[in-house]
Image (cartoon, rainbow, N blue to C red; front, top):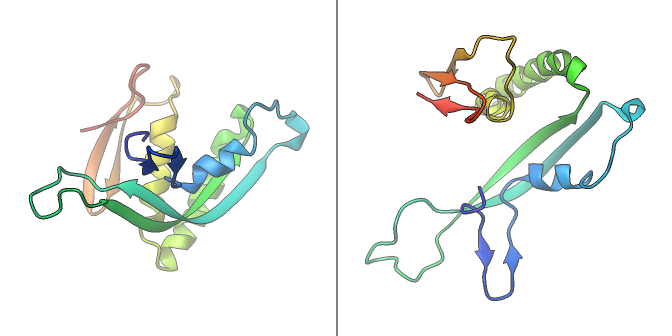
Amino acid sequence: MANDCYSSFHNQLYLLPTSEVSLVNFYANQVIQKSLLPIKLTAFSHCFRREAGAAGRDNRGLVRLHEFQKVEIVRLVQAKNSYEHLEEMKKRCLLHALNGSGLAIDRLFAALLENHYDEKTNKHCQFRLRNNFRTIRLNRKTTAAFV
């Protein structure tokens, strides 16, 4: 993600890659008491990423930037309650999908798979992403590998 961030090297300024960064940083370097959990956060933001691909003859020297708008839902929860919160988030995500945000469900599952590993569950799972079925293999070193 660091290479995808748009930054100005001259004055060390960065544009927001995703609002998750801001939401999670509210609690950076803090120990959160269990009694305060769950913490439910939501943000809407304009996000910026470097455009993929190499510069060609026609656009060499131009600033190549991808801007999009996104709603992020973040929950800070105890591990023992994480599956309960996951199910609630999936239900809310489906509601967003029914209201026209069709990528909401895919985005939630991708984020969960990127950041989660559980030895008790099956290490292979299959999910539907943009009308294609994808298989995910989870292991200790790489938490998510799209096959």
